[in-house]
Image (cartoon, helix red, strand yellow):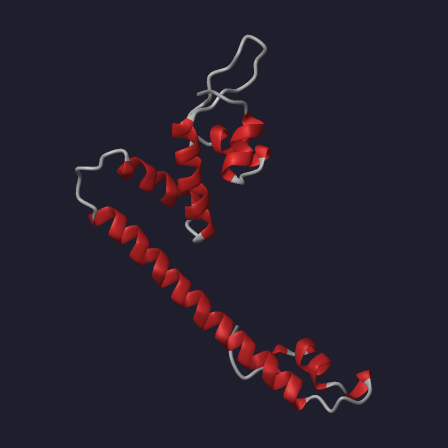
Length: 138
């Protein structure tokens, strides 16, 4: 079962330029080509690209995905490294959530302090112009 890059894109919901990029950086193996220089793909590339796409949707970085793919190719080895990558990613997500929560609180405070009058008296504009008026670092 071989098909061109457009069909791989359709089956995986990954855009053609992204597929080419993943090949260029080595996340996808370089595809064999026809005599007319068209790339050909099969089920293994669909599976691998779905893995990559799902990992990206979950926010994993390219290098983490590269490591996860390497570990997935060794199914009998310990999953300690996989756990480590996932735990590190979860910690980063928690850090981002805390940062976004602080940003939300600060923006809500600015909006609440706004008198809804004229721009020259607007607390939002004042706070954006002077970081010292913020209550937290963000």
